[in-house]
Length: 431
Image 1: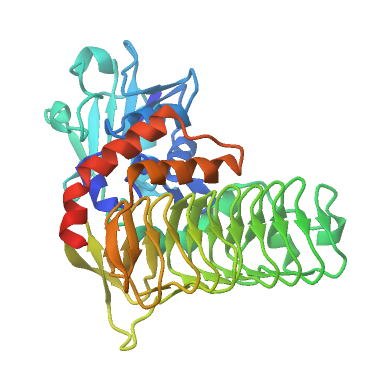
Image 2: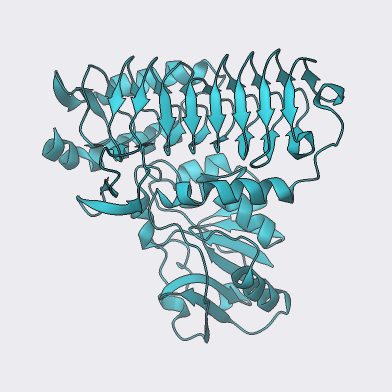
């Protein structure tokens, strides 16, 4: 069996987080949506459908002979799964998995009219050659198949859905790992933990290889598990309250206050951070508050940046949806900042509740910026906003990535140049 993750039309509603990546590359808990799906449906090979804009980046990210991008393998049985589907153990996953493992006849699985999965034996013989080259992925070739309607299935519809699911995902993903050691933290042989470190419920605390926990740190897993991955560092007097995930090489700075958060690979995190996902390779290294937010890759928040995540009247928060060109209700009382890749803000920046910042923005100055800034915005609320010159943005990105031994590839440049052109009208309308 081959597993194919696809992007449907709804993916545009997940901007700015999907402006530079396929939807299944979004982080949720310890894993991405892709990781969760692969774990739920073991397969011989992985096929990935992605939009033309991000297809070269997808191929670059998943550079593996066993992974094919926008190409259907010859004469193989394929389980197609929506990239927005959160494949947690439950009735939906069990129904889909049982049908595929039984080598049953072709069938689709839907929820509220949305295609969640399709099992297609000998897919290349049954489906048109271009089934993985259309964008967005079209359910039309599956229209004549029998359908099972799933009573419950979780699909990410808006970016803030990831925040709603964060704490349950952290608990679920931690439980899926091997059981943490019951030994005292300072006795864990694979990690360096100072004897003064306080561990509450150490049986719920997992430390990877090469982890360093410095004097006076507090790891409190009373409310949920804590997973600290390989080569991460927890500096002096930092407090981490579970559920929480600290990714490989990530640094939790001196005196940080962290709770209910997930940080991917090689982030630097300080100040107060609650109920937030930082995808990877981003910095919020200084004092300031970040709550109920999602940051992409290569973001940087200046010292004393603060995000409002609750309205003064405790009312429902609305956020701008670029795909709808309108503010829409989030259904949430708590919602902070959604920031696309490579965006940055200067010291003392303030963000209002439900602010959406597109890819490659560079913000500065006092007072609150608008609650929506399209990609490649430059400026501040007092100075006004203009277009961040593409050549300058790419030059800065190259410097930033080189600091972590990465380089800006031709695929990166092509994606960002195309995104720059495609969002020109948005900048004109909002600046």
